[in-house]
Image 1 (cartoon, rainbow, N blue to C red):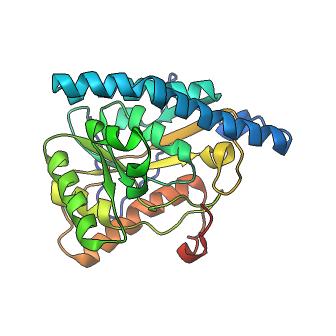
Image 2: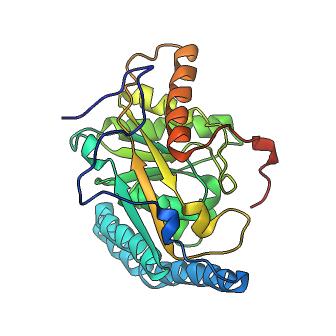
Length: 284
């Protein structure tokens, strides 16, 4: 049975997991070496991503467009994301999937420290997912065009009206039963850090009338962290915590409490003691 966490309840994942999903510290599986190797692996990772997009995506998108069947793109997008990480030596171990109701849509809110974070959210929650992504991805050849086929909605945070329209579209799809994953920091934090969460995804969950699943993504910063220019093989841990009820939120103060509750649960799981200053995060 699904467990819904009410306000002020603990959001830490103390529930025991099944043997098939039990995970050990992912950091111990990260194999690091000389920086030049990390730089070469970083280039290899993006070469693989680019090759998959150039070889697989065009025919898939063309056939789906001609047939008017956007849903045909989902399994190929899922396969492509999995293959990208597999060919770069990255595995994902999941904990907490048994806490979710398979018939219930959710907003999955996670921390964000790496380009690798999108794959666990998109592929490993146990359901077809939409994602909320920054507008810059629309400029990427092929990827930008294909985003709309798999419910990846871009958001322009520099334009309040456009951002609100994007969130409105995402909320409508959420109400139709499509779950969404959101990295609520809005940009990648540096390794080991966390930035304050933006409130758009919380508004979306409240307006859509669905619970929020706090998600802690561990070790992705050790594998491909912001500002490092390096990539390494290893394991990402994705810890999904008990869903957090949103039905009690009725005003801005309630929303602030909800943000604090969800971010606090993720910080506790990651061992982050305090938030970093957003203005200090300037590296691409």
